[in-house]
Image (cartoon, rainbow, N blue to C red; front, side, top):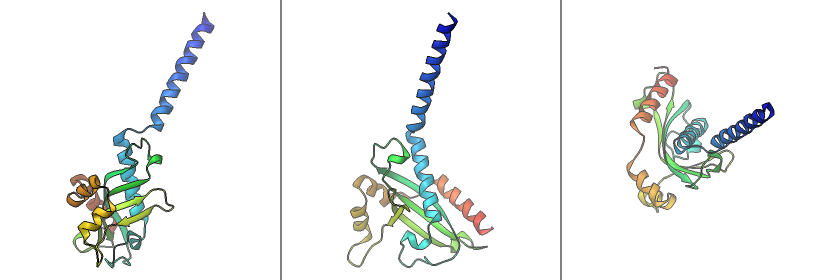
Length: 174
């Protein structure tokens, strides 16, 4: 009888451990979105401003880059874990924090952004107009339609903007 009880306990433990392992490998959508946004922020903040590829917007400015981000979506859209995500479509607003320099006069880098998660380091592409292609047309060339529509009208959430400003002020010593 005791051996039988131990067998059931072992079976319950094995099934429980399997369930926990499965839960850890399959992120819920909110958790996956949070992981993606954290990685976007970390990638953009650790990149040299010139890597943001903004043409001439003070990209050589020295200071700490502080970013707010928004993810519009990712590919493949059915990814269930961070490791499956290949491309992220979103928005970034970054300020280059210099000592005692207020946000209102800081060098800023902003706009729709595409991150290539398969590159090492992660690839960063921003949408910019050219002499031949208007900004709106370039956005539609680079983004899938469902994300291009969002990128044309939505930027950071109020919460993300408040966090960005607070982190910027801390980095600038304000």
